[in-house]
Image (cartoon, rainbow, N blue to C red; front, side, top):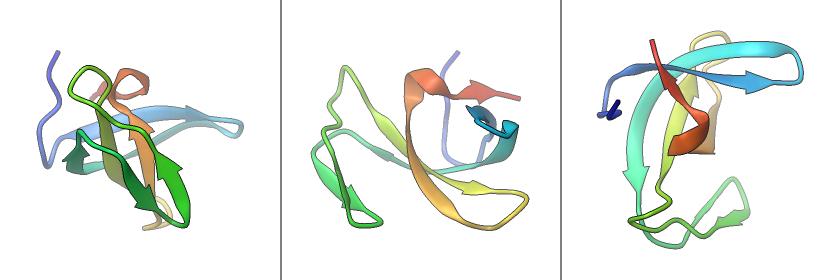
Length: 67
């Protein structure tokens, strides 16, 4: 299942499942919220926005489920 920009996605947190929107796919090294991420074509990351809080975060594509 391929995730595309604008998709509603789910990821797991210590508080349980969280839902949000996939905003931007990253496939090279980048910084988000003062953290470094080593994304690649084989291991892409997505910048996602939480539906509940509006906060953004970076998550590996493999950790996201399209809903």
